[in-house]
Image 1 (cartoon, rainbow, N blue to C red):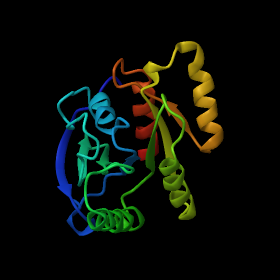
Image 2 (image 1 turned 180 degrees about the horizontal axis):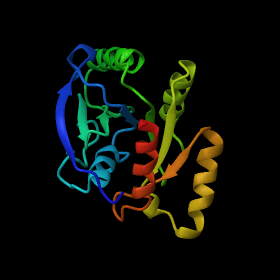
Image 3 (image 1 turned 45 degrees about the horizontal axis):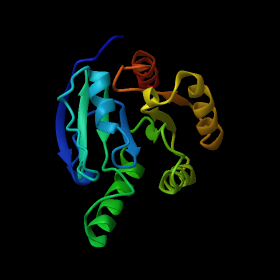
Image 4 (image 1 turned 180 degrees about the vertical axis):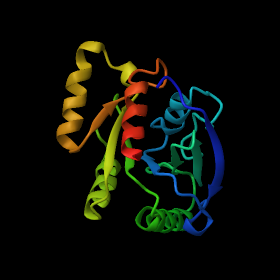
Length: 190
């Protein structure tokens, strides 16, 4: 599959505002600026579908994208950085936990890790939370194009060892591994 037509559906702050549909859903978890929006744009082959920003913490709602009526991607606010009050962060956390634990359409979570950096403390905390609820999860290692080709296997092996489960490399710039990632998600959707 070279590309999927995709469209933005709606933004929601909490579970009760989420769209009512039966498509398999894949929420995207990751630190701010890890490349979630760029991932959406790459697999849709549409650079303008999801808004990207150099300023961390721009996504503040759950943004839903329909990929050719095969599956939905839910882009969640990034964790680890946001210029908002502790009160707002606590509210987000409550709403996101409710969404992740009660949304019946969720097929698997997708956690994003930046290939250029070691796994961060908040990445581990998110993973521990996910595992404590025994939720299915896939890891996507973004910005792999920044890693020299000879070192990519080493980076992926290290992440795979530290975060058990399926780990896929990804680059939004050269769409490296894009087809395999799409195929993986489509197969999980069945």
